[in-house]
Image (cartoon, rainbow, N blue to C red; front, side):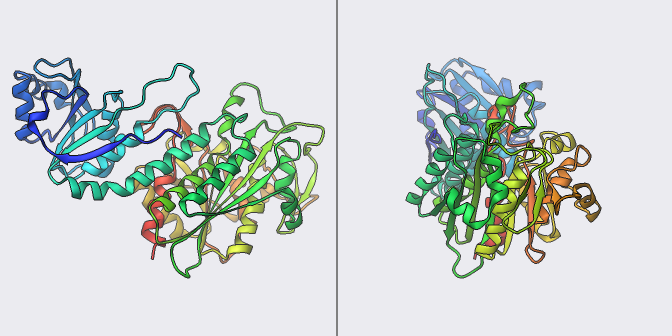
Length: 486
């Protein structure tokens, strides 16, 4: 796991500017003057800072964007970044500013001149989230250098930024898991990484195939029966909230999805290493909760399987019985994630009697057709719960959209041979997948299904390089802080 960049907060030291060898980033409110720090930097650079700030290019910047000055005279640094950020900027704009600084971060680190800006902690969070790499190149790139924030009240800013360190680790853990190739992140390896979080104070239990068979999880086991990797369910518990019933987070963990007998096209199949993205988000949230010692009761459960074609693999036309007891006709073996979730959702409710259940899954390509890569799709039986999730997502700058789940869609997954079929075809594919999952939710349990197929892995975003995004960790952490902490 790549370590988050080292960040320190200290008093402003104008004498240190000339000799600093790493990048220098100056946070500026476009409507204000340069301030004392900006004036000193301007004097050292013989007026270059003011000329840049007075330019049309700087005036055209949106909040959080920056203009670079390369090899400025009078300074040891190779780069000064002038970052436009109004005093009354939002947290999202401040994180964008930090990410803009991080995009040019190198081995020499950086000096961020934030003075008394109210959002200095959020600037540092955005910087930390963007300073991330994941690859297997043999030519190793040098690690990111440390970043010093010069601020007016370093102890206060450090205290405000402390929870962000735990969140950054949670996001990075999710990104690492989602980015790993399937020959490395097998079901055994995934479970072992989760078990290692016992060192953070989490309780972790691993249910193996014989236990899953005894429990009656034949929907989940059917998905993995064509793979050499054993299917598992991993249960993580953080009980920091007294006697309150826990919030349950449930994640789809298909470490690789060929589609099974309903084989996917070869083009793009390499991306199916990310089909465990929902389980990755659940793991990242649980890590963050443990690191920040959250005063909430949360259980995280993930179903870990691999969907492979084999002589023992599940076939279209098979009928399996879920833990709940419902029979399921297999129409398409590539509609496998909902089978995994069905059993884990039922086990979760039976075992923990949760106050609410949220499941996350890279479940359907149909949600990408509907929403693209900007928003996750949300489906629910409880408007209050989905409202709180949407509020948290908006506050944290993660796109989410509430999609319908009307009873009329149930007709599309009605089976002539079993209680339900696992695919309703192309029409309303994301909705019928959610309708399938709803069958395995008890009516009295508030529930939300989040389809993250379009947002779990993307081309470059403001806060993440190309690849896994970690979408959902900060949103769910915010939800837990706002609604479930005691």
